[in-house]
Every structure is written in C-alpha cells, then in structure tokens.
Image (cartoon, rainbow, N blue to C red; front, top):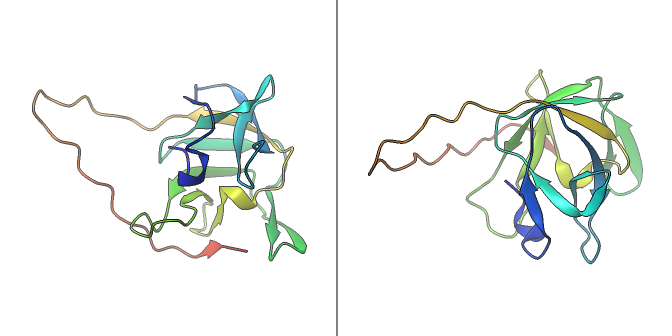
Length: 140
C-alpha cells in the first residue's frame, strides 16, 4: 500500500528481490520507497512485506534529531488505519517497535526480501479488513 499522501504520485507494486531507496517524492513532503532508477514512482508494499536494510535503519525524530534503530530488518505494516489524514505506513521491527515510513532518512537502500502470502479469493468471497494495530510508533 502507499500512504494517503501519495495519491497524486505515480506508483507500482514492489517485487521480491528488488533494491529500493528511501526518498522524498517531488511535490510532497512525504517520504517513501522508490527504485533508484525511477525516483518519481512510489513503490507500494503490502502489509507483511519483509525488508532488509543495507545498514541499521535511520529515521528522524522530532524533525531535529536523527536516530538509528538497532535493526537492519523489518516488516512493512500499517497503523491507525481508522484515522484519516495521518500517515499509516510504517516499518515494524522484531521487538514490536515501529517507525513511520515518512520519517525514514532519505537515501537508505533496502531490499524486498519477501512479499506476504496472499491467499486467492474464491469467487464472491470478500477480503477481510486487516485489524488496526496499536504498537508504539516513532512520530515527529
């Protein structure tokens, strides 16, 4: 998924094994993932997508400090989905903590390690809505 604030940005789904880069999209103040060859196209991730960062994850805290998480791996997830007009996309770490994607420091390289299993739906079967998560999230 791509966060609500990227509705005006071209996007495509992620592919297993590809390397992405964290970037700020032109014309927005929102950060997300893009291919190094197509920085103007947001790469959308499904909740549960496993990510491997080249280095420990760095993110902005309160727009002044840059912090480093002690993790190079995480899972893409969405939080507070019932709240409109807030960022939902986040990287969740093995300890259950998370950081919003829009706070990730730009220029970090990340590999898509695994996409989540998506069971095929039978004809007429509706998708169940994912439960809202309430884990602690680093926010500005």
